[in-house]
Image (cartoon, rainbow, N blue to C red; front, side):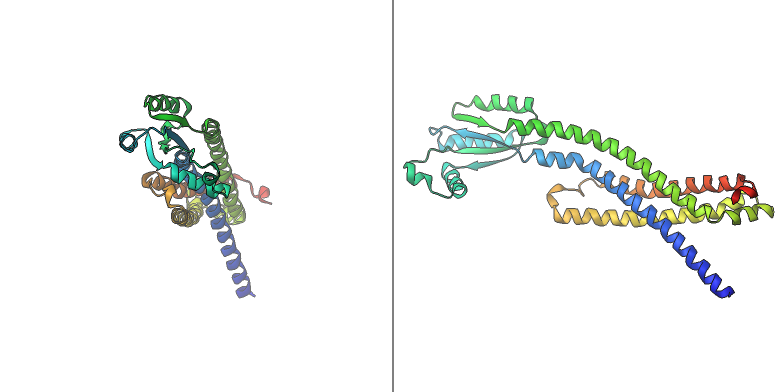
Length: 291
């Protein structure tokens, strides 16, 4: 009978530890994933901005030397991320593929113009900067027109500001929820041992002596949960980088390392503080209040 009871208690203890580690792991993983998203949010926004093209159309009078000179000018311009030359023949071919018919054979002439698709650096994808760049480009007499989607530029910048604000709010709320969840898990774990705490106190053990093993056990559970969360976050980063290498999620090793260390440290800190106050609460209770 005693052997069966001991096995039951052992299984119960393992289940309790497993639940505590699982709750710490899940909360820290989600919090860490949110933190990684926050530090990479600017990069994601910049990546999207740099996909918006400013198309520069040249007049038919523009010679090859004019186009070459303009291409060289773009290579040295500080606001240019990249530039792609699209000849009128290539533009006609692209248009025919989209429309599904050869419009040149119908018109008898190619009405399209040679152009450059200019992709700006993210810091310059704002209305004022693009307007200044447009004014500069139009000084070239061979340029017929400069076109870009003004509405998209406006929406992108407005939405990025809104998203950044909401991400800060969500991060704060989620951090608070994380603390409360881990705290509740630790308190429940200590609650199941409240009679052991009171028994040790009744035989003369000091509060510090009673708290020490409970705190150390909880901290170890927090460390295990933190290590698992860090491993899972690293795996997540590697998967995202492998699936979308252009995002460069591994290009910020210092910031990423700080997030991972913070996740691990938070697991240890919260379990320590939660266990300390939970044991203190039961140490201060009268025996009758335990029931």
